Image 1 (spheres, helix red, strand yellow):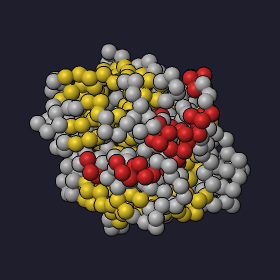
Image 2 (cartoon, rainbow, N blue to C red):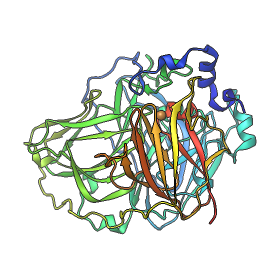
Image 3 (spheres, rainbow, N blue to C red):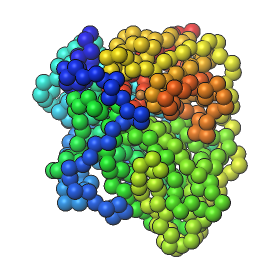
Image 4 (cartoon, rainbow, N blue to C red):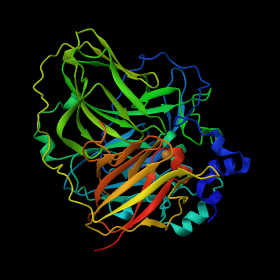
Length: 490
Ligand SMILES: [Cu+2]
């Protein structure tokens, strides 16, 4: 297959321009795209919490959202909201989610962090075609229909949920179009709960907040602005508005009490260095209790959280450490404002604590049976590659055996948040030294900066078949920085 067919309209337009892409590579991931619409001041919108999914069906459809004052934003949504409805499932209880596609283009749903059989993992050419027939011309459409496991109009995704409590999320994963599809609104939380976590005295109810961070730019009419086909943005699209749960720089009133904040960076390319300002006396504003794959063994205090695309940080913040009346800004030290917490509630009652021992199920994995190396590099033609290969469905870069523990070593030329499907992993070294402050626990995405090498340990369990390894900078992913791996039966 030709790259033009694989990568879709954006990449095809870029290829047609014939620009020297490597000359366009900046030092940092992504390029800022400015809004043409007037933007609100920060901290005017109220934080919203996405609704919990009622039932087991999600309709993907266009909806007009109110994000900017006085304007509407035509978005692609799950059930009409952005973020989509939060799916809540229970560890050990199988769940299904039926997705119906009423959008004008094909979609693919990936449960990010899900331990999922291959047929429900959202392989990028396993498309759900539009319910009302394909609208418009899609050059790669027929080819995908021939090669992928496509469904007409709807698809039932089966999630066994044989995995521990964790903050997962679901989002579009269609080959060559993940960046624009997620940007238009196709992302939502999926929370897994279990007995181990329920037994802990962590903040809950109104004091447990999933917080999805995305950055966006807007056209003058309020629609999302995405630079389709613009080669200048091939390192990633950065918007000039930060949305938290779909609201621009929102504000939320909190009691002087502990809150559990479940951060998800669902941005296409932006990394955040999150800090609370002012810092609380004594520092360690964020007490991390979990990462991508659920609870840590023990809490870790941080003054800042560096969160790359697709990563999750589950933290407890004790707002009784600030004087009542304090406006605590959440800022991105590499960018600007994110949101604000106003410590103004009067309810001081708080029976939550953060236990010194959180989980006993995060023991180190045994030694590996083999080690593989994956180099994440840009080709001379500008495409993003793994081991010098552009993504091609059906070409596996690794064939681990079911049950085996392997070490996978990732080496980068540039910033890449690297994501593995099927199993969570443990980071075992960073640049041949100790792991970083944000590498602890079970992870499915690990943030690599330019010229780094990270080694992770993973055990392949339960489901033979084809899965994905890829960069989660969505513009890199759409520009072919993906690979298949095939888990072989024992
Ligand atoms: Cu990348």
